[in-house]
Amino acid sequence: MGEPPLTYLPREEGFLEPDRPEPDGPGAPRAVVIPFPLEASVTWGAGTARGPEALLAASHALELFDDELAREPCRDFSIATLAPPAVATPLAAAIDQIAGIVGAILGQGAFPLVLGGEHALTAGAVRPFVQGEGEGGPLTVLHLDAHADLRDGYLGEPFSHAAAMRRALEAGDVQIVSLGLRSLSAEEWDDLNGAVGERVQVYWARERAGWDLDALAARLEGRRIYVSLDVDVLDPAAMPATGTPEPGGLSFEEVCRLLRLAARAGTIVGADIVELAPMAGFHAADFTAAKLAYKLLAYALSDAPRGTA
Image (cartoon, rainbow, N blue to C red; front, side, top):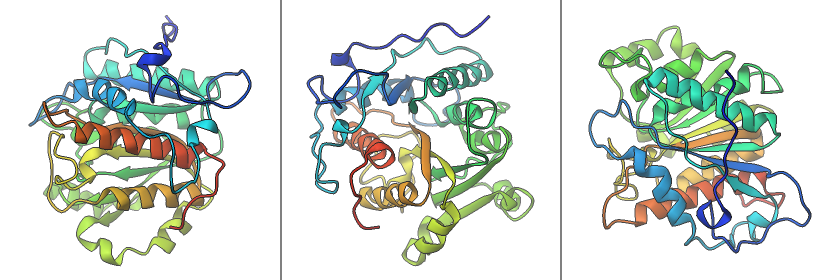
């Protein structure tokens, strides 16, 4: 059986405000936002199933004008938003499900932005880029996260969110550049110093004052880049609404600087934003995640000149 047909949300329920301007002329959307409310292997704070809905709601409050780009980026690309699917079970089936959805979006020639949901979904979301629908050679996953996510399973679940990057490596010709890491297991440390480390480059959060961004840009130059942004890469002062917050994280502007660098060095072909776990009465975190989503789309798809790195 094939994948069920894609169902889109009405404009007033989708990403960004309903009255946003769009490019002139008809045509298929250039970007498709994919809410995927996966919550199956979280191990501490819960709530990722509510993340996509909260992010979409917060996006309606965003200013469309971007002072860095000196324009409303949404004028450069049309956006459609899928209706959140009923997430399949068990977790392995959900991974296959998001792979099918992303593959369908790529087949339409659109840019997929997946809104999680937990980080486990990335293992499926990257699969179409290296197994059929993707074009252009090897894929680099730009992994912004507090955690390495390189365990070979966790608590008996091979597709756990704690194994997201390990499973992504198995999708095909994939390399990973991880930025902002500050938490991992002894086994992950050993793996990074072994065979796994040959395909993963880590930029530790504690060393960010000395990061060689020119070398990072050179590593990404000309590459197809999939961005996997776990909101816990941000410091908990900026992003407390996540299941496993870690002190010592990046600022909003530091994350934007990395996204901007990636878009200028290579080609961002798809992305996910995961692990938002909304907190009652604290909508600032939802707004921050929505702002990151808009900035990411702007860097990836806007034709406007970009600010300095």
